[in-house]
Amino acid sequence: MKTFEIPEFYRSPLITKIKTYQKTNDPRKRDMSPTYVDFGPVGFYIARHFGFCYGVENAIEISFKAVNENPGKRIFLLSQMIHNPDVNKDLTNNGVQFLQDTNGKQLISFDELTPADVVIIPAFGTTLQIEKLLEQKGIEVQKYNTTCPFVERVWKKSEQIGKENYTIIIHGKYTHEETRATFSRSAQSAPAVVVKDLAEAKKLSDYITGKKDASLFYEEFKDKHSANFDVTKHLQQVGVINQTTMLATETQEIAEHFKQVMVAKYGEENTKQHFADTRDTLCYATNENQDATYGLLKTDADLAVVVGGYNSSNTSHLVELLEQKFPTYFISSEKEIESNTLIHHFDYPHQKKLSSENFIPKKDKVKIILTSGASCPDATVERVLNQLLSCFKNATTKEEALSFIK
Image (cartoon, rainbow, N blue to C red; front, side, top):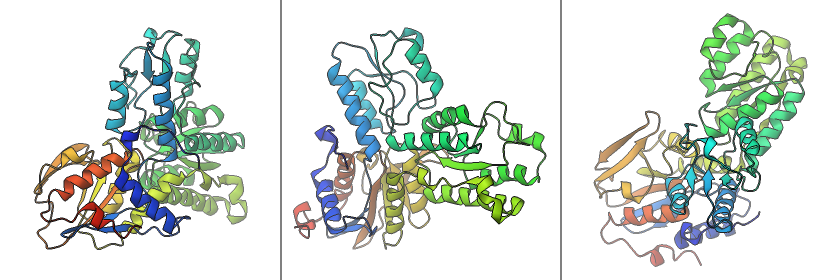
């Protein structure tokens, strides 16, 4: 796989050593169990796969290239390049300005742009409408386009099944940048509708089976369907694609649900005419991070710490999985760990910060799960580990703890 030139300050000697050890012992990633690092009074289960993915490293390389190649020019990011506060802050510290926030709210008017300006397209991509607007202003849209190749693969699949007359069902959060971009492109080739989870997918399928009156669709899925969507016609043939950072297992459940609805309505022998197989739109990095998290669920840890941006969808799903078994703390950096008795963390479903006291159990040996989202630098994960280590007296040195790695 291609390697990227990213700033050295995002890397971590400690995490690199652990990842190299994991890769050497399991080059094909057949074993998703974590690596246990023993520091005496505390041990860490380090996930088999976490941190910067291909798309994120690609975006970081292109973004810093834009900064280095354009001294004196105004450089804009269409929105957050990735959902990580440290990386976005590093770019703004280098003079990059945001045109929109993560929800699409305008921060700087497009009217202010000139052909001499540089605009970076974020890793999530952008809508066709915005891309066209930038081109009309003389901006070289493709020069610094950091759209993740795996997101583009989803777009190609949506175009393909759209041309085959399938309606496109997008599993995603309809306000998310990536879903907005995917929706705009899907709607170019076919009717499209967004569902956020299996529960919403089941609501949509009620219109296929006729359990619900068609007129209710336009209110229930307001702002989530393409223009001129005809619920009486456009749900006879469907295919499911996804926002690449969603839970892969849920995307598969949603696809299987619609497949079985079509089997029940049209018969097994007619399934292919009414349901498109789109399993290859799932992102490898999202899959591997989630598979590694299932590996963490098999441990005997006392708690889990997940590091990432609070608006990071892929990170939130790792938290969602770990919360099934462990007290789980979603933090953005080491600064959220105030002491060995107080941690500040994020409640993603309710979008609010919480503080928890005595989060480290009083035990002779504490075991902590440590992982991060796909847009979190390894250096941040190491700083979190260091901060957690500082909560324990008489912890062994890193050299001793990693002595098993030759």
